[in-house]
Amino acid sequence: MKKRWKKQIDHPLLVETLSRELAIDPLVGRMLVNRGIRTVKAAEAFLSPTLDGLHDPFKMKDMTEAVQRLDFAIQNGDRILLYGDYDVDGTTSVAMMYQFLKNYTDDLVCYIPDRYREGYGISKRGIDFAIEEEVDLIIAMDCGIKAIDSIAYANENKIDAIICDHHLPGENLPPAVAVLDPLRSDCTYPDTRLCGAGVSFKLIQAFAQFRKEDPSIWYPLLDLIAIGTACDIVPALGENRILLRAGLEQLNTKLRPGLRHILASRKKETDLTVSDLVFGVGPVINAAGRLDDAMLSVDLLLENDDAVAEQKASVLQHKNEARKLLDQQILMEARQQWEDSPEFGKANSIVLCSSNWHRGVIGIVASRMVEKYQLPVILLTEHEGNLVGSARSISTYNIHEGISACSHLLENFGGHQFAAGLTMKRTKFKSFQLAFEKEVSQTIKPLQKSPVIPVEMILPAEKISLKLWNQVQRLAPFGPKNRNPVFVSKNLMDAGGTYILKNNHLKLAVKTPDDERMIAGIGFGLGERFFELPVGNFELCYTLEKNTWRGKSAVQLNVKDLRAAKKHA
Image 1 (cartoon, one colour):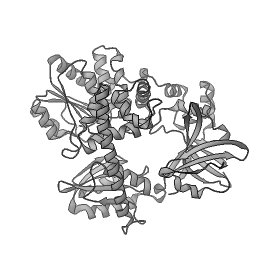
Image 2 (cartoon, rainbow, N blue to C red; image 1 turned 180 degrees about the horizontal axis):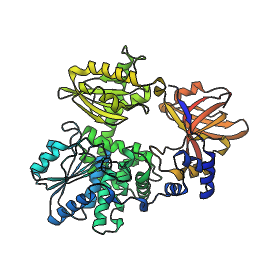
Image 3 (cartoon, rainbow, N blue to C red; image 1 turned 45 degrees about the vertical axis):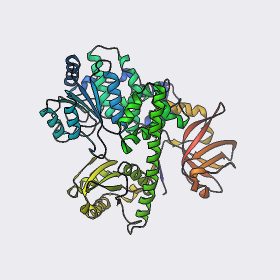
Image 4 (tube, rainbow, N blue to C red; image 1 turned 120 degrees about the horizontal axis):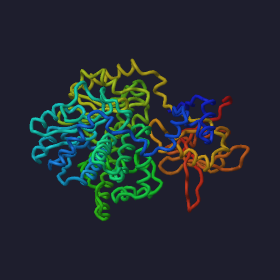
């Protein structure tokens, strides 16, 4: 599908001011301005994020009550249950909290709900487990903000709860001792972008302050916070940026045994980036909860014995390979079902169902379908007499609002702008399919279905260099709201080294008519574009990478798109 290249608006005076005051390259100044940075102070904080820039955790609503209850639990010998969601954010939160609280008590027990038998959130089964274990306090992480009935049930059985969540609260809060969530309407915490691991960390930070501990007591947890933050795809700004930077520094200094063995297959244990966490670590940790028990991931993250960690990592790697096979099979079936349907090429949404699809994988497949067709996608499968599904959306359409408009046909649903989950009666499928398509068609605009590549700036090819790559890295770590800068270079031509690699990747070698220097590039998944490569000059849309081979490093283009040169800029 043809993509739109959308260039940022120029602000030359601001760029000049920041570049002069900070003594930085104007290209870096321009990238800072493109990210909404308008002052020297903000630019300094962005370029040099340090742990000193973290906010006082006691600015978060209910933090004092949370810390006091946790301290009482430890002083009183209470049994504490660490309850987390089954995804990366939840499992890293549980591992992090367990590692920290082991400094103070051995009376800890962990619990992660079964994705299929219990679903998301704090389940009655989870509270029953707490009762059986004679738990006095539950610390719920990356879940719980809407668990009113479950927390009330816990209270009836003399169990208190502290909730560390980052999802949008409902009209009423659960009756917990403390509800830590920066999205609470009555919470004035300065940063609302934290993930579940981030909110859980703030409790740890506050408890350490309360106990007058040196901050170094929580430094060993920074790698887990970085993994949770990166894989939950929250904005890489503010405290998230600080925690990502510090966590990546730790990961690149010393890897936990489990993480080292997870990353072994990628043949990369140094110079780790957010992408390595999202695509190398996240899927393996998630595979446990998708196909088995998410506690396997917690155990791996906490394992210190190298040989045992290798065995545990091997188990999760095999589960992830099984997940990939399911992913490919379901994607093939979903594409076939869609392209064979009468709505193909006409509808503004995709809503499909099959009783054969694995519930733990359909969310991933829905994302693949969005990438392929650039439409909002909902995939459903059968579970306990109902249809349960995952929804994913294009960046310009709020799928949560679209589903909400059809909520009268659903048993329940939840999520956010880009992703959601839903449950409906089997008999409601066709009605929902029609209602959702009608809602999307009334609200989506044709231009929204055309994928957009946000372009940082037009870059003359002669400026492409390792020096520029190093300058760009000053903006790292990259992630949502701070993407790896995308450049466009024009007046390029094939240097004679362009061909199709296996797995449909495009290997490029380009140059300009005035410069014989060859620049290498690779376009992942762009193999078919080889046949569209113009005979004359063309333009490339790309990010910069450093490629090291046999001890020698060179800059390389990670190509996102290409097109024939336009006659007019």
